[in-house]
Length: 336
Image 1 (cartoon, rainbow, N blue to C red):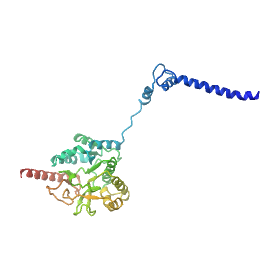
Image 2: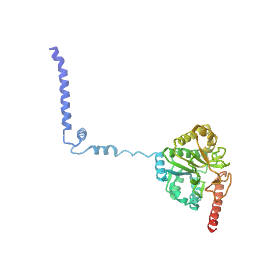
Image 3: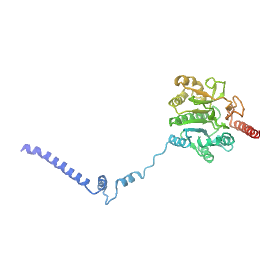
Image 4: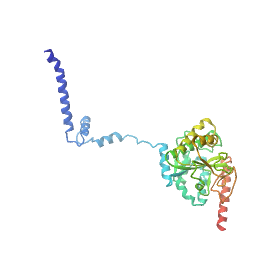
């Protein structure tokens, strides 16, 4: 008798399992195209054919906010649109002060139209990075590839006097964008917004170099690190080496917290050459001209940069003079 009693719970447990299995087979044998749909209808108490898999997905997702595109993703999408066939893109940045009417942005874009070598076509490959909303709105009114750099967290809209904290923050943002561009497999030629383009500067870039940089002062040998660099014009290819170089450059800011990116590059240039076997080409000021080592040879220059001048007004005034001299040169050249 004790043995029979001990078997009773096991018998009831077996019957329960059997009935559950029968119910499960019944549900899945119903005429729904998707048995899971029938389960959903039964559990939710719905009648008729409603609440299918597709409808349930709509119910679950209709109130969800679609995923937002990150700032980096937005920038990458834009450089892909703007890039040349060889995956090269031209970059510049601008803030409110430099995008005001008749200020640097207008002069910069105008220089392409005043130039030779049909360089207006290069505007199709130019991405302008706006550092604030007003600069972004102005950019959209005059150009088709404008990117609003919203992920900065500081006010970069004013003129930002040379070497103030805001100025230093502004110039470092471009190095991060350079790195992101290379990581996506794109080459870039970065130009400061106050560089005037009169001829195609790509003609002076040699393929052997990892990095091509303008010069404040050029002393004859394009591979010599004694040349004074100017990062107002920088070209880089999307190699693993260059990506690591830019990371190292960015990290080096911690050693020189009050210095802008050009000064930090100058301080670490020998480290970069030895650590990464970095091959750098410094461009002669005869081709990428400036006010630090003034050479106004209009038969050779491709760009003109008002570096070594302080203040927006002074730079604009001198650029206008250079532009008129360039126009005069072109006019006389056509007559001869």
